Length: 490
Image 1 (cartoon, rainbow, N blue to C red):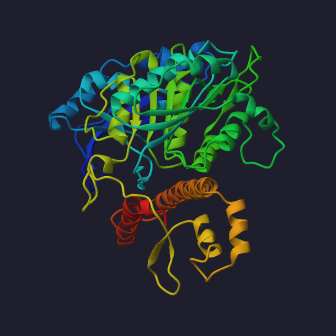
Image 2: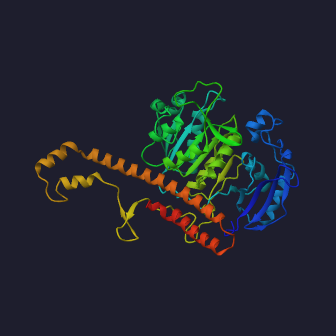
């Protein structure tokens, strides 16, 4: 923030001058632009203490649906306009203590007053690598019997249209309730979208939680096993949110093939979700709220917990305020297309790295991510040399005598019998794809742990000290390596 002189609104909770109040501050870099302002939570239509018995039942499960902006909040935010250039981004920072703040729709409240693009600051300095080729998306939606119906097929069709409007070619893997499968198959994908719909009946074996896996939810286990060996770039969940004790969850059916419980859904929290995203190699997450969502605050809270755990873009999207999917399309085009246009919709909350707008030295904002290749350390040296994953064609070359000498007619007959060209090509592609997913998953884990270590190290030194400056330089180097060179998948 200091280096890029970002203009931002910082929100945090305070007990001064009144208990349970919101504190608002305006900054450019480290410079405070105006005096801070405070607003009691009661001015937002919220009880003083979240979960208080004085709160309505609806207010406890979805504060975003009952709260409203405090009088004077919009005027205070608009005072930032005197310091902004035309079209400049306003960054939203949720400071500590956060309290109930992550559960409220700040873009919906502040956007009309500022009329500038609003992005949320990421928690970490590390910027994940952008995909260099077609976007690989996994899409999952459920309509649990315990909540209001979700029109799974209709919302999937809107997602196709949003991708088409964004000009982002994509391959989509679709996972839905078995009851919704027929309706989903009838949806015609937009041009540029390649579609694979997975059969939910193949998930029956993943309901047993005794299997050795870090994932317990049958949806996540089914998807992990069913996704192709190629890594996933973005995972898109569509469904109800749920809020419990200030923590957000996804509310899904009991399993992809079982949806009979009229009282309780099954919940996915950020711990299991983060592990899942790492396993499938996804750097970005989209959480979409369907019309009639049980708890939009649940999705907002879940998104904030994921952002606090791992680096990477996170979009929280509300179809009730974006029925045509235009805001989602703009956000996807900004992240993965060539569009410089930022979403200005109250229906989208977007966490993005500032480098996407103001790139590091020596890199263009529109520079295409490096083409993926494979590399390994060169023995005895610090450099690396490019290699390919194991290739079945090498074995053919040896056995046919083009490598290692002539192997004789008997060996050639055996090879012709056992290996057709089609089998070899398929096996080679499968091996390369499997290797790619392993590398992509490893990259996510590396980014997450590097980011968390970076945050810990930065917090342990005094601002402005020599050690702090040294850490900043080292971490900047790590971020540039991950952001620019990790496309080499070393």
